[in-house]
Length: 286
Image: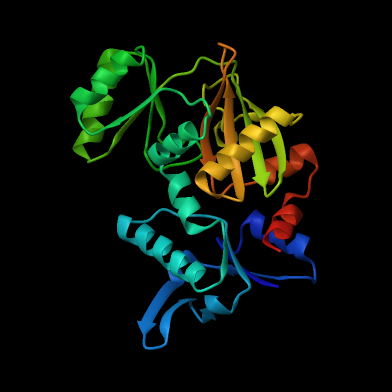
């Protein structure tokens, strides 16, 4: 198979996919910035530089770099057109759109029966301050779009929360306010690949954020039948056959679904588990 990988040609994940592919598949990096589409009498065609993406057996989405709203919408629309033309896109564009939108993903997780932290998404400072009070005066304020803990802020002081909400309102942000869940400094990252689930524990005793990018250390995790079922249900909720699902064990004994990443990394997971994740991903594409 010839597989296009949307992401940096120098990324660790591209090299890992090449190692896993060996001589069975050709892995071709494709740059987002070079994507262009032509709509004419022949139909709708998508290319990247000299590469015609319609000639690939599959397109594996490995990243979604920052861009303007127009650029992001164009990329998603272009991938949707490619999928409609019969090219397998992993993950499907709609799954990426749902997962990257924290409000929509949280709603989908809740509708699928998973426990999520109480959340308010609103547009005015007054509404956000009401949410701050209703949610117990200790909240996490998140960008609607974002990953790896970037842009997240915890506020447990009314004056600080007010200043944050005012600043966000001035730049036209949606105010996404989530109740802070008291925890033991660790969460669970479960990677769903089709019918398989592998996982690790991320622990950070110096920061309430448990992302590896924030200094968390990773530990092996036994994926029980219960954890696997929750992860599968979360992945199905956003429509992603390959998904990183984050679960947070609270001090209250409850297990909260925080988010689903439809473009999950697996470098730390491979190292901790010893599982050749890239091989499983390619098997799922096959």
